[in-house]
Image (cartoon, rainbow, N blue to C red; front, top):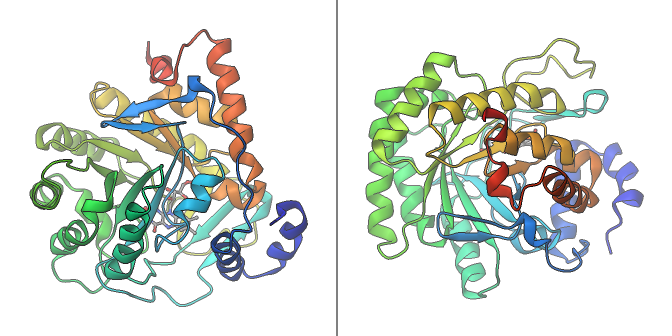
Length: 354
Ligand SMILES: Cc1cc2nc3c(=O)[nH]c(=O)nc-3n(C[C@H](O)[C@H](O)[C@H](O)COP(=O)(O)O)c2cc1C
């Protein structure tokens, strides 16, 4: 059994990416803890025709190549998002490219979509589906860095992986792939969504996977208005708000704070929650939102829900707190929902706006 409290000091001595590879190895070899018992029914969420036993998910980037869905669901996550997956395998940026800022409970990364590519992930996702194990698995799609036609890459991702996905994410918000964030612009996004949706209709005719757009917390208010209008007009099924930020909030203390890349973890909480609340107001609660950025305990998870999130994700806090965090957030969240008189998560979504 992998004991985080014992392993943490060792993992912290290692370069972050080596520590992550070791963690994935341990997870693949069933050295991970397993959550006990079913989830509290107050945490259940039904969205897009899928049943989530609880609203807390693993954010993209942890399991880029779809290797550890089972063990991560076993930790107690209500869903797991794999990726970002690019059509063709690629190395990403040179190492080191992940930096811990322990004083800030934050990470800066500039990985730039490193991974084994869509065909390799498809093989594992196919085997996962064939095993008929329960659990919601979303697939996050990226583009190769040297592609000349980005929309073709997302279409290729849908064709390779769409049939295995409970939901698909068009990631146009990672800061480490040149040109990627430009796809968030109104006209470009409209064309991209049309192409992705057409491909989804072809590959999963009977159970179309919902298509979500993952946006950057750095979009201006005007950009957000544009993107919300496009989404409502073009049949996007939801947003993930959001990715890492290229901003460096005042007060960061970690010695790596000036490294290039996207910042995640605690210092991202305020910004990402404000953008989430704005997207909730813009989409008039008609589109489900997944809130992500700086969730490190039940208070932040609950705040995301009250700001407008139907589901919540995290990544960075897991690095600092370990796997016990998942159960702590779920217990705390259930208590907060009951304390405020809500019968379920759905009732609390957007409560701060009412
Ligand atoms: C090391 C690392 C790699 C990531 N890779 C991806 C990725 O491939 N695709 C993606 O959409 N988001 C990626 N993310 C962003 C996370 O999914 C999430 O949006 C962000 O980290 C904010 O959540 P957090 O503060 O809980 O970490 C990555 C984050 C980290 C820390």
